[in-house]
Image (tube, rainbow, N blue to C red):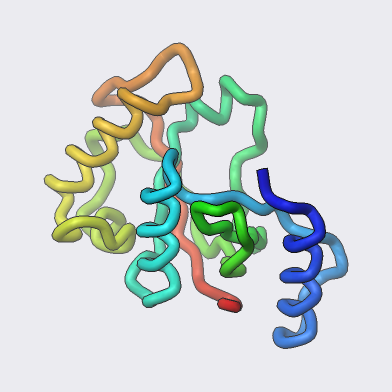
Length: 153
């Protein structure tokens, strides 16, 4: 769990360096399911390679969490739960797993950035780390999110 004080301090730095940010503190979260995965995916964001992510709609349904929306800000944590980046959601689309596009797979920046590797990586992830009882299915609804890096620090 992220230290609320460090997240609040990071948010104040963001607001001091990026004009027009709201007062309300955005949600803070990490990519992936392990410390190593969070750090490697964050590195791709900070390097400008990763501009997309995918989530299981079934996981959102199981946890009751709201789906991301265009314009939403998120503080991205590293594997140690320290705030490291601020991103803004720029596009959201829900498609079946087996219809995720090559473009989206490339935007996620993982492995060789192909759709084939994206499918292998994400099927493995949802089979191992799904938060809901439905797990993985080839036609499961996937939330494909695009974002831009707003601040890194």
